[in-house]
Length: 316
Image (cartoon, rainbow, N blue to C red; front, side, top):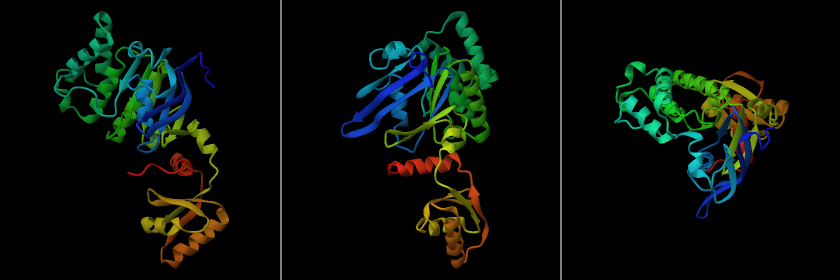
């Protein structure tokens, strides 16, 4: 476990309320140097609010955090020189060129002279924009825009990088390239805190914080979360998976059922008993079962189970 002295981020009972609504409720964790730390949770779970407090953009209502050696409530101005932040909405200016966006970010972070020349070259090469440096940013494909935004957030080589839904809407190939860059940055010693909705992205993180209704409901490596799962999963491949899902949700012995690609994943209490009941229910309704068997739970299965156990996601 990362000690408080060596941690890049220490959050202690971090809490944020807006009137009667508690967005983040007593969240505590530590993030080590060079660690990729992911926040995974449904909409309204408190992920973005947590990131904004850690980045000094929101003042905690109670509790606190130390980021890169700075108290987020007392040293917010000094903190901004030690971190990079990329918001979930594209954070650069579409009516500026690529070069102009880099220059604007350099002024924000105090990067100048020979350092600016070297870092600008790195951003352009990393983003694949060397031949497009005079293009208006608004005209770039989304994948290029996001790499440019990442480069500008990391222009000053901060100790900690915050990425809020950085690949939302990006195609799978560009998303994978983006994560290759994240791993390169972390390998250089920068702590990366990232929020995501994508399960495959969660697998790329060193550790995951699962959040629901403002609370931290699980914290472990992806492997550790899978190994701690206590609900067996039956995978049912059937000719009408959507209909099968509805038929299984109220079946005794089935805790929950959800579509997973073409298949249905059913969380069950007892594998043998549930398998018999599932076969009987589906066959009695005229559905053809291609395959049914127990599988290791996926990260998505675990996520759904944890959220359900924590009261379900916020509706709406």
